[in-house]
Length: 306
Ligand code: FDA
Image (tube, rainbow, N blue to C red; front, side, top):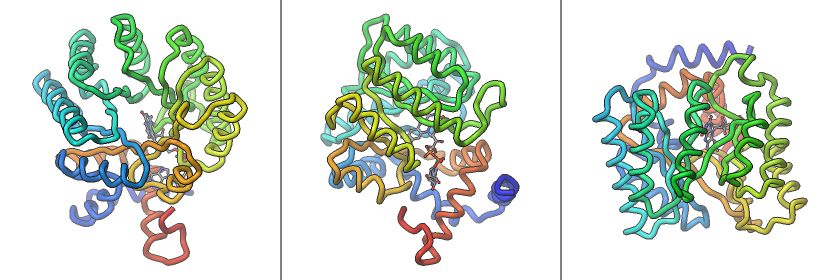
C-alpha cells in the first residue's frame, strides 16, 4: 500500500510546478552554485558539524562532460582551502566517466585527488557499478593514494564478502543501507535483514580497524552504532556519523551535543531539478519520506523538524 502511494506521488511529480519542487528540494540541495554550497557548509561548521560536498552532474554521456565535473571539483577544493571549510568531497564515478571508459575514469579520479587538499569519498552507485568501483578503489590505493575512501551498501548480498576482501587495505569506509532499487538476487529486500547486515558489516569493519562513517537516519541503527563503537573501545574522532542535508537535523544536533563527530552530505549544482526528479523516480520510497516530512512541517505536532 505504501509502495503504491509512493509510486503515485512519483508519477505526479513532473506535474508539480517547478517552484514548488524547488521549495522542497531547497532543504536537500544546497543550491545551484558553489557559493550556495560554501554558505551551507559554513553554517554547518558553525553548528559543530563537518560536511562532504557532492557536485550534482546529470548522467554524463561524453568525455567533455566528465572533464567539466573534474573542473567543478577543482573549484570546490579551492574553495575548501581558501575559505577554511570543514569539508571533504564525495564523488560519483559515473560522473567521472566510469561507464565510458575505466582507464579514463581512473585518470579523472586521480586528477580530482591530485588537486584536492581534502579527503575524497567515492560514493557507491547501483549494482552495475559495484565491481568496477571496488576495482578502481584498489587501483588507487595501489598507486599510493591514501586520502580516498569507499562506500559499502548494507542491502547488497555481497557486502560482507566485499568487506573481507578489502581488509588488507584497512579502507576508510562509509556504511549506508543503499538507495537504488535492486533485484532480490542482488539485494536483501526486508527492512530488518538490511538493518542486521548493516550491523554485521559495521562490526566487521571496526574489527578490521577501519575508520567508519556510519551513514543513517535510522535511530535504531544509530543506537546500535553507538553500542558497537563503545564495545570496540573507540573515542569520538575515531568514527563519525553521517546524514543527508535537511534530514533529521534534530538527531544530528543531539549527536553533536553528545560529543560525536557528525558529517552532513551537501549536494549542489545547476541540475538540482533533474537530479531531484531522477532520484525520486529511482527510489519511490524517498517521495514518501519527503511527503510525510513536508506534511509534518505543515501540520504542527507531526514529525516536524526531525
Ligand atoms: P531509513 O530509510 O529507514 O530512514 C530512517 C528515517 O530517516 C526515515 O523513516 C525518514 O524519516 C528519514 N529519512 C531517511 N532518508 C530521508 C530522506 N531522503 N528525506 C527525508 N527523510 C528521510 N546510498 C547509496 O546507495 N550510495 C551512497 O554512496 C550513499 N551515500 C550516502 C551518504 C550519506 C551521508 C547518507 C546519510 C546516505 C547515503 N546513501 C547512499 C543513502 C542511504 O543508502 C539510504 O538510502 C538513506 O540514508 C536512507 O536510509 P536510512 O539508513 O536513513 O534508513
